[in-house]
Image 1 (cartoon, one colour):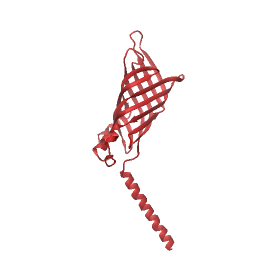
Image 2: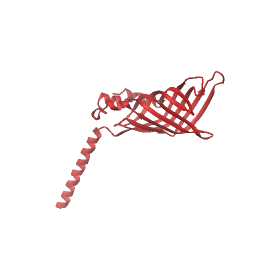
Image 3: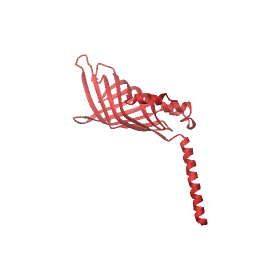
Image 4: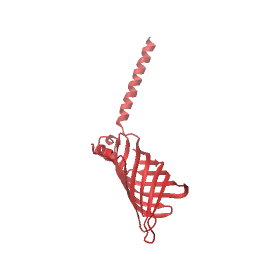
Length: 212
């Protein structure tokens, strides 16, 4: 009986110790935050104009990713990205080139991460800034373009600065709206670009964005 009582005490102590650790951990800054965008749309312009790929519209389906709260470095991947490039040359009629890529990878660094502290992640003003806004450099690549068949020689490489507003619950969020600009290469054609993109759930994301 004494042995059984001792085992019961150890079990109670173990459960109490586990509960305390979980409670403390829940108050700390999580190691990662996760991104999940169902469907987003964007529009952009490329410079100089009067050449190939003057402007573009695009749609991204199921963009998922994660970001380290310690470094602010994150990665995103989407299996479907549909783009329509418009070429409006003075010497030729307007042309629209529609393609879909199935490998779309983005690496980014959220510089606002360096302004936050563990104690401020959820409750402080800097934590609020980090949670709802992001800003920093990024690099992305779109590859495996589909149009009747896979074009192994086609690609898009992009390097620039992006910033936007995100909304979510806890450490899971959605990119409500964001803008970017920089330099990219499309099938060997180099251009500067500027664009804006928003999630289809933007109207529903405005309410949590306004909550303090």
